Amino acid sequence: MPLVTYVTLSLMKRVPIFWPVQILGWLCYYVIISFIYLTISPKIIPNFLLVGGLEVICVIIITSMLRFGIIKTGVLQKKLTGQILFIFLSAIVVSLVVSICNQAIEVLLKSPTKEVHKEALLFVAWVGNFAIIFIWNLLYFAYHYVVKSNKEILDKARLESVVKELELKTIKAHINPHFIFNALNSIRYLVDENPGQARYAITELSKLLRSSMHAENISTTRLDSEIEIVQSYLELEKIRFEERLEVQWSVSPEAYRFQVPPMMLQTLVENSIKHGISHQIEGGLIKITAFLEDHMLHLRIENTGHLLKEIKHDSFGLKSTRNRLQLLFGEQASFSIQESGHDSVIVDVKIPAIEQEIPLTAQLQL
Image (cartoon, rainbow, N blue to C red; front, side):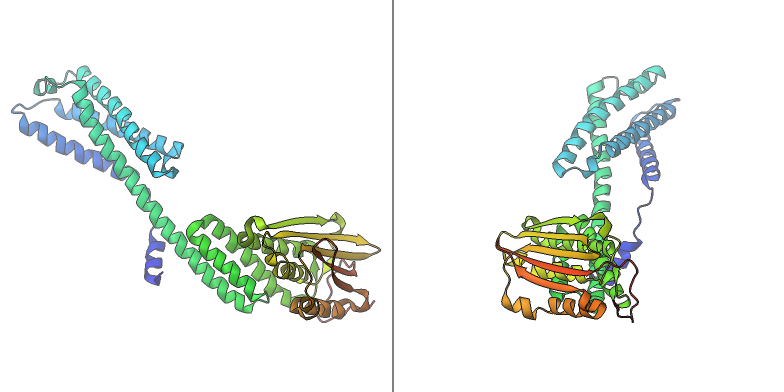
């Protein structure tokens, strides 16, 4: 979307214009009707202006109540067919109420207008009022349709702008570019199909990118923080895989406070989905487990699929994980990946259970 159009839409704000337009519109109607009545009638009616004024006040109150009903019932959020039905039915009922009120005002004030239209019946008055209320309904709904359309265009422009910003941040991040590519494509699709879900996906991807860039400045992070990152990642993958991806968590409460290398769990989960779940036509299950045993923190990722030899030895994610564990924990850490007997692959990580963050420049000596 051109920048000029985006800025123009950004400057468009919903101002409370209902009451000025409501009052001014009915006043104009009053003036026009008064002119017509006084033109076709050779007589000057002493209380004509009073009667007409009271009728206009009456219709202002009634249509304002109609607006209140429109807002409370949420008709503006319904489908077009429901809105059209409401416009017709409400015009029938409201115009009848207006006609009765107008007749009551003329009778109570003994308006001589009866002499001008002495053959007019309530039905005739109702037909005229129906046309007026119907037009009022059309104008009110049309205004909100235009406002809603402009808002959707503005929201789409904002989402597209955020997607571009995320693309720039991705360059600085250390997340698999294939995943980012897929995530951004999914978000672009949602911008048109489901803006609400697109906003949610953008939030999750932003969290993931921030965490990835923050990982450069720390050597370890709490497991609960790492799990939040993985959850954001999985939410994004669920957009792509939908029902094909099932996730199970099994984390013991005491494990949350211990330190793990930042983005390590996310890397292993991403590796499981990339080389496991994505190759299954029907998708599969990924189960993430964490628990304490003998002062060691155990992390296990199990996914549906088969272990390929080139993945076991040459996967960049697995290599980087082994190297990081060796640098941080030395021989105290262990890492293994193996295929189980029931079409699943299991990654096991065991590291010392440490609560304090390890300094960035330090290597743990145990």
